[in-house]
Length: 133
Image 1 (cartoon, rainbow, N blue to C red):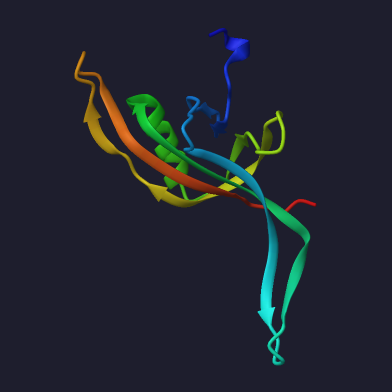
Image 2: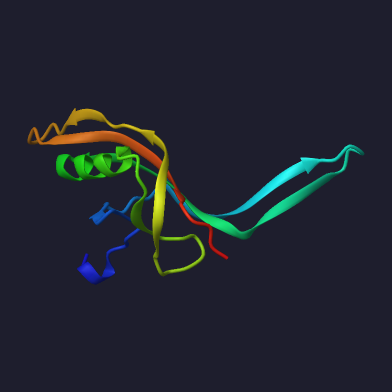
């Protein structure tokens, strides 16, 4: 596959992650709102303004050692970081600042064919720091 045809789904703090498939990547806009039940029993929704943030969920079956260590340092850093994510509503990546809100660290594995160190089952979820309109 040529470089210009390579699908890019997520870049974390300058580290481009390999593309994934089979339902392990999602990126959506989430409305910032609070649902309230009133005294009379009816429900109302209070929307924040601006009222949307990008959310991204991704998991990787296998990652090479260098990529895993770079991504893990970003995700565990505790600070906001720049990321580019591929949204579910278009073709252009969205670049913004994100926080890691969920992390399942990978387990250590080996490739049987050549003994190369790989990491297995990394999963994470990101939330955009600042809401957008």
